Amino acid sequence: MQSLSSELKGINPVIHNAGHIRASVILNWIKMYDKRQVQYMAGHKWISSTENYEVQELTGLTDLLTKHHPFS
Image (cartoon, rainbow, N blue to C red):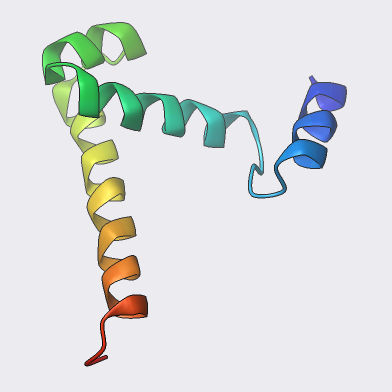
């Protein structure tokens, strides 16, 4: 696992660990599928666990908006 992580960091230095990859996959699933399908595919027992990833996506969009908005 360590060698895979090191190899991925060489390809894309933004990736910090396997959790980062998992979060990216789940965020992409949220864009493509219904929340309940994503919950099942991710193995979450509670829908709130899946919904937490939506909050991460909104936070990222907010950061981009403040970074690139001409009035900020």
